Length: 109
Image (cartoon, rainbow, N blue to C red; front, side, top):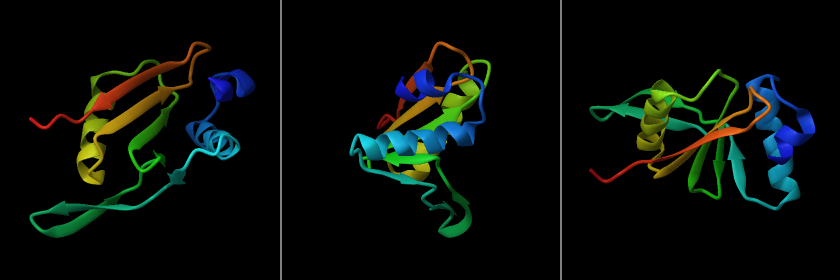
């Protein structure tokens, strides 16, 4: 909320990602930006996944500036969680004046 209140809505995703990093530092919240996770297929590395942010080594945070968070974004986040081995993701949409967010949890099923 602080980032959206300060910057307003409609800027680029990368701008919000960087602003969140500033806010996390100010709030003394542990995070990593652009960490690299290998994508493995049948035992072989085929690519890298680079999430926007990992917060407290527990939550994948993906900043968005889209019309609305939908099933496509949720599906991608589930894949990101699978690749990182983490269980919780947070999609944050900063396109509009009202913050939209969606918590995504990778279930054991």
